[in-house]
Amino acid sequence: MEFEDKLATLAAKIKQQTAVIQTEEATKTAFIMPFIQAVLGYDVFDPTEVVPEFTADVGTKKGEKVDYAICKDGAVQILIECKKLGDTLNLNHASQLYRYFGVTSARIAILTNGQIYQFFTDLDAPNKMDDKPFLVLDLLDIDDHAVPELKKLTKPAFDVESIINAAGELKYVSQLKRVLASQFSAPDDDFVRLLTTRVYDGVITQRVREQFAALTLKAMRQFLNDQANDRLKSAIIGVSSPPQPASMNTSDSDEGDQEDNDGKDKIVTSQEELDAFNVVRAIVRAEVDVRRVAARDTQSYFGVLLDDNNRKPICRLHFNRAQKYIGVFDASKTETRHPIDTIDDIFGLAEQLKTTVRGYEQP
Image (cartoon, rainbow, N blue to C red; front, top):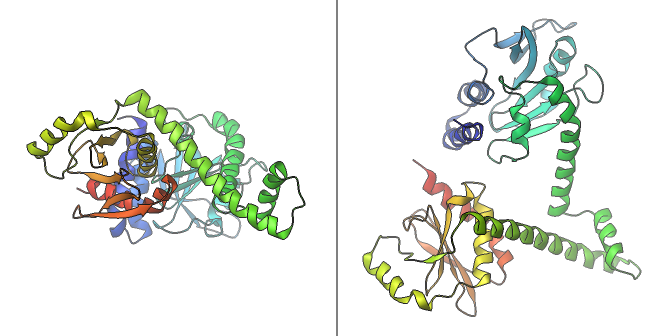
């Protein structure tokens, strides 16, 4: 199994079993031990590789334990402290990692709740664990840039020097990304002022600041939307054929297929429909591989399907009218139409679209 497939398999397990995981021990057994074994490649049943309840006497803290120590070549390389699934990861609750980091040979420390993994090293001061992680992995929202770095921690590829050398850049890039994400969500006054001075020549009064605060947020959302559309358009051109007319009935009706075939010369797929399709793909890619999201245009509406399957409608775009609508489906495949004025309005239905897709993924 490919490395990415192992991560996807574990992510699917987390989605399926979250409701029944109530304790830290259950989190370890269901998610963290499989991560150590299947993803990182260390044998959790071999005490020379994985030591549970690892103990090292530190000052007055005799007998304090770290949940797991991973060993390689006879030396402790990685320390892991675990919390219950859903718990907020807070270093104040993982003081053992700090103390053990300085008295063992480990250069990597991991704090995890089974879904989110925070990776630490000693960039700021030798043998003292940093306060901020150099890498964060969320199994339910995997950053593609994190995967190659995670591979360096696996048993076959473990190279501590390579990891440490890359950690500095990773740490600051990840922090900058979080700052940018925060600004794109709710830009602060300094950020708004910086952008305003680049485009506005007048005096920046309170009224101007308020005006540009709203304009900045709107511009950034449109920018992200444009970027997503550009990338997905490229992906469609590269891996997908143009949308083909087909029935969007939730039953596999030959009559419906024949109707579409008879009228396919009358179907015109607009750029606006393709842009909206790209937005839907961008939204649901958090749940499924974007290549599984297909388009089918008809005379009445533009349909978006999972796995190109009529029985798995994600939404319908009713754009052939003055007031545009997007139809979203519930668990019983009942369509509810929502009026929209711009393509950007589709993001307001993101959770409903993702819930629909998740429903099709349930066993």
